[in-house]
Structure formats: structure tokens, C-alpha cells
Image: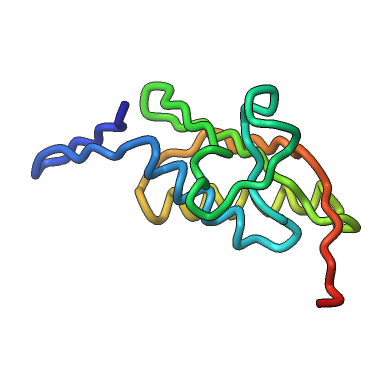
Length: 122
């Protein structure tokens, strides 16, 4: 399924995976996030960290008549205030998608699937 944007020059189709990859890229670049988690934990295992090629697996994008709803499944770093990380992610993802694709983002929902301790002694 794709999102269709029409203008005076024609139409543009944007695949939902493209939106999910842009959102996932913004998430993993954010402070306090260890990585993306699978949105299907029962099927894929307990809070599995996803690699860079799997950004879209931790993101659900829904199109509601031109308004976009995004659900992000993340794993945060231990010792970081989760509410601050979530608030920062919401504004970052919304800004990035609105500026990159010109979309109307209705909501960005954060689902924290786990907390990981990062080994900094290496």
C-alpha cells in the first residue's frame, strides 16, 4: 500500500516502507535509544534488537485519509529518563517526516519494549 499525494503536476506515490525507514533512521540516531525492537514479540522473540537493515520492522505506519499515525517499538539505554527519550523521539520523527516528505503526521506513539545496559568499557 502506498500513500498518494496529488499536485498540479501529477501524483506521487510513497510506499509505507519508505516512511517507516525514514522514521526508523531518525529513531536510531536519537540519544538514549539502543535500537529498534520487533513489533511482533511473540513471533520474533523477546525484545530482539534489529539491525540497520530492519528499521521498518520496528515501525507501524497507518494512513487515515491523509493523516499519518506512527507506532515505534524501541529499546532504550539503562539509566536514561524514558519519558524524555520518548518526548524527544516524538518531536524528532514528526519533524523529520513533515520536512522530508511533506506529510501531515497526526500521532507518533512510542512503545518501549526493553531496557539494555550498554557496555562502555570497550
